[in-house]
Length: 235
Image (cartoon, rainbow, N blue to C red; front, side, top):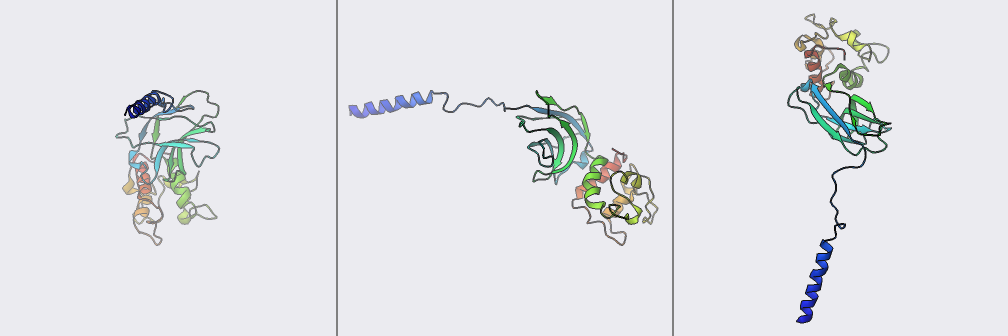
């Protein structure tokens, strides 16, 4: 019996020593290695916030299409809210920080803003304070370039006399009469989506060629409507 008690006492003694060794399971400090990038930004045009995609703060290396790391930006409750978000522990190969739209597979769709951190030696705060979610530049790159330009001036001709290539599209749309409109509407009437023929042709089968299935997501039509509502500005 005494031998059994002795063995039990010795086992407990060894266990106590092991539990007191702080190097077995050291607690993390909560601080990731590498620099930190911070954004402090408010967003306008919230109706055009992407839902089929993700708005993110992302770090990019030499491959500018696929981020090294990213953190999703939640839609703000109002346009007055300042969204503060950090990217901690930037990898050494990071060259730029972007406020971007990514696919669910984390491939770049559109970059609202890019900041060079290639020579950064300390934490950075992005020098931008406001972003318009419904910008014309986003429409050009996410909508016109991908779905419209092949028929509208990417080749030798522009369907319906409408050019939607970069550098030509804005002047071809805003306050320009739509030659297919039965009610003599402009292609884009600033501030008035219901009076803009581009919205009509994307939502109604009103001409010989049906455009209602050109855009793969309804939110892209919402993006165009929000841009028009804001005044259809060239930025």
